[in-house]
Image 1 (tube, rainbow, N blue to C red):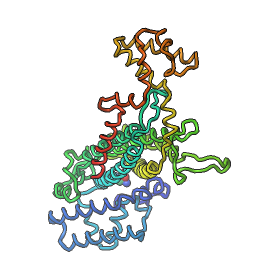
Image 2 (cartoon, rainbow, N blue to C red):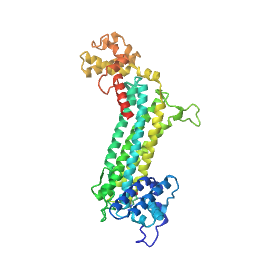
Image 3 (cartoon, protein in one colour):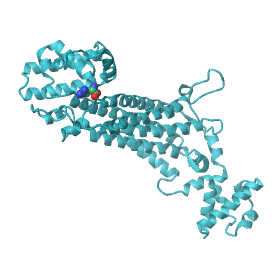
Image 4 (cartoon, rainbow, N blue to C red):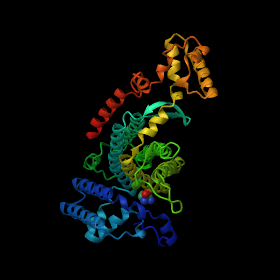
Length: 455
Ligand code: ARG
């Protein structure tokens, strides 16, 4: 493509070092759409005859069909997806193919392709996010009022329900969807026409190209357009946060599946055995999800570091944006699919969860609230309950079974109705504020999500 200036061919090692077609071939759809729109603008500008335009457009469609049928041979010597397709087009249709690159550079071409690619992939990831949300809402509905301990510091804290716990993830995934939509909005701007760095003296109609490609507008600065990789970083960040959420969900599942917790059982289809220990049933999917999240963070980091020292505008370093991008996209799509399936098949062991939730210590704070209602300042109430807890620990009598005399020996603020606070159902129903784990809130939120997710 640059033979005019050079008298030696590119060294073999340099070809191997610099080629990107082995992975950027997957931009072919976007590359062909971009080239077709570019050719149409050339036609409008009088740079191509109708016949030449048709030869280009049809030639590109035939190449597209061949690629999809697995009949296209990618060549490493032609470096990347852009040169492979353009070269093949010229092989097939001759002279008009050689006109296609007028007023265009691979710099604005790759920026166009990767924006279109991110946009298409974001749409797919959004679908998969919704699907996982549907699984979680379905499980939350099934176990809406199943009581279980909630944890802070991984120590039993206060009772919650499985419905409330699972819906927490639905909220997180909703923010993830918002983040992706936000990134999508910002990236949907056409850089085509920015050329290598400074546009072109041959002026094509950038707006009509943008419209044909579904972009909302055109970039306003050719240098920014060529150098910008924000959209890759934003996409990678949004994916990394999904990873964070899936990883936390994984950790919860891993704990719940232990003999020590025993709150949930994953299906055989979503667990693996041990080659040595016949009794084992391992939550590998959750562990892999937790592990792969490290890679998602690494991919974001790789691109951020690659960009940080680059002078404007294009530098070849930018080719390094693609493998992390593709890897994160592939990884998160599979992670969302497998987690949706695994959650849908998960069984919650309600009796075990209820037994754990029935630990009266979980309602020690409710007992302090009871004293507050009897006029004791909260700090004092905290201390008075702390004394009751200490008495329970030292005597071995459960907190909810201390006698009237024992409570009264700590403070007169304890009346004979003090032990009523240990009724679990009542404890939930008293938490009437929005966002709290009570049955009405949970079913309201489930109905809300069912409506949103059915769209
Ligand atoms: N394969 C290149 C990339 O991914 C395309 C742009 C190449 N531009 C250049 N001037 N070498 O970044």
